[in-house]
Length: 109
Image 1: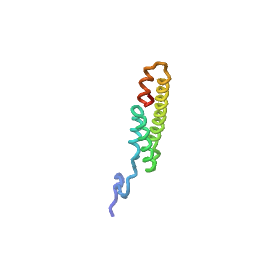
Image 2: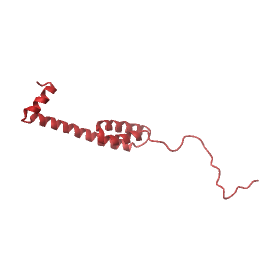
Image 3: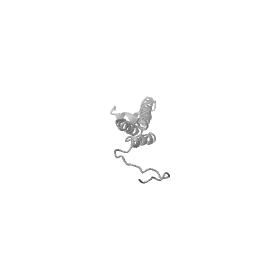
Image 4: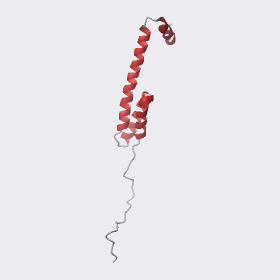
C-alpha cells in the first residue's frame, strides 16, 4: 500500500458538465445603452430594453439594461417635450420670419 505525501495537495478531479460561471448575455447591450445616454437616448432606450430582456431570459437581473432603459426613456421624453415647446414658441412668436419658415415646411401654407 502506498502512502500519500501529507504535504501534497489531492489531485483535482474533473466532474464534467457546464462551467459554474455564466456570462450575462444582456450585459454588453446594457453598457451600450448607458453610453448612448449622451449621444442618442432613443437608441439607448432600445438597447437597454433588449439587454434587459436578454438578461432576464437567461436568469439574470438585467440591472444595467434596466438603468439604461429608464434613463434613456426619460431623456427621450424630455427631448420630445423640449422640441414641442420650441416649436410652439416659434409659431407663437410675433416675428413673421420664424412662422414664415415653419408653416410652409409643415404644409400649412
